[in-house]
Amino acid sequence: MTESNGNQLYCTWHPERETYLRCNRCEKPMCTDCAVKTPTGYRCKECVRGQQKIFETAISQDYIFGILIALVLGYIGGIISTRIGFFVIFLAPFAGGIIAEAVRKVIQRRRSKKLFQAVTAAAVVGALFSASPLLLALLFGSVNLFGIIWMAVYIVLMTSALYYRLAGIQIR
Image (cartoon, rainbow, N blue to C red):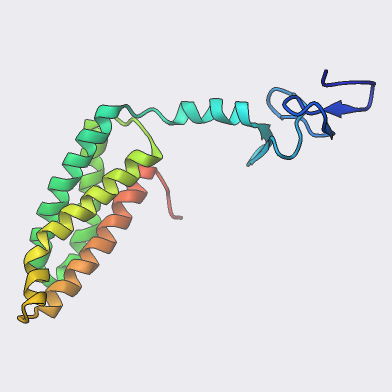
């Protein structure tokens, strides 16, 4: 009972609500609570859910392998970055790209926003684990301030390059 007479429409999911809005994909009448704004217009929640399943293709083993690879490579990059000082500015984005491509190859280019976030977090944890001697030295008084600064620069630059490369965001 979505149409009563020629001009009145009622929401498919809330039959008591009158509406003039239709999904631009399936043409079902919907109220403002059921409408989801997309770049191409308003769609119902069912059509949006169906479209998202197309883009979320990752499987559970992708999380395990992606996190392990990012953890190990983040750790290795962190160790190298503590030894090269200023040149970490050039190494960090390159390391983020290498980690992203290694993860992509292993997960066979499957996609998921949560996967990319988990991989990025694992790379940060790996880098922080490699920075643990610097952090312990800071606690016990023998401060290597430049080592900590360069490690922070590495983590920020590597993380941003890694996430943007995995998520496919292109800055133009």
